[in-house]
Length: 382
Image 1: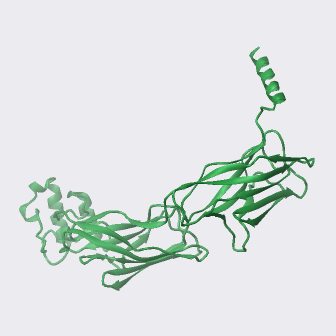
Image 2 (image 1 turned 180 degrees about the horizontal axis):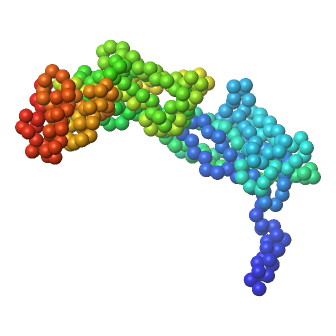
Image 3 (image 1 turned 45 degrees about the horizontal axis):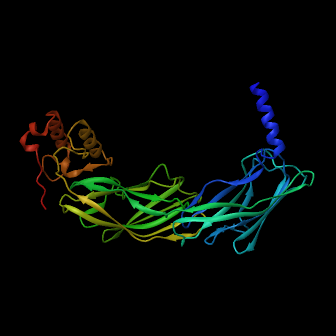
């Protein structure tokens, strides 16, 4: 009886015209000022197959369809739904774009739901947070028999959110004499970039460290580089130029997080407190050669904390890891982090194998308070 009732209900819905109708749909669209984004227009057609369509996309002020290198409006049919269909897009002025598609063999679009076409939109940099309204109007869908259906206008919202591509630096605290990595992050929700150049300006008492080979120590983040290379050069006055590019013009991966790590070193007599460093004159280049110049970014590097004799890796304790770190340094490696002041436990003019013995003696005590008095502290001259 239950199945019979369901069959009767379905029949009544069909006869009264209240069954689900074919329609176009646009999902949630959010953009940030300056962003270029592809937006999907879906065809939900459980009742009828269609071979062609035409419609007009009316965009609000500040949102435009993007053109490619040949000056053509960027719109495409979805690969999963087109057969031998072609698509034409024309700018009618006043924010109106006409889109028309048909099949050379009168084939229907495949499937009964999901994206039918994609349009690439750009939100102007001047837009502020809020909701804008776009409209799909003058919709005409054509079936295989040539029958045409005219559908009602479809308004949809474009939400504008705050946000922009920018550089940021993760907080860093150094103990006098310590060497540590400084993470420079690229937050890029809007665009992808293939190259950059900038200057890192460090305050007195802090410098970019050099490795055992004499080169300035910096590296690109593994998760973001492709075949990119990085060059670092000292410019004097605490300034260092960083330049990176791709051999194949590939973009950096991802949209957030560390892009480059620079190993910085605090002098043994670096002044305590919060010091100011700057990323100066950053220029980022997109794959098509477009350059974007950003404002300078100032950030703080804090110098503070006690130098603990034997705490070579600056983790707050003295143990076997410090012995290993010191040994790596003595054989010519460049361990990071590394604290030269803490490594020189015997207080002579340099770091040697004798300091390894001192670190071992401290680590054996398990507690700095139990360490031999000659290794408990190092005097740092301010």
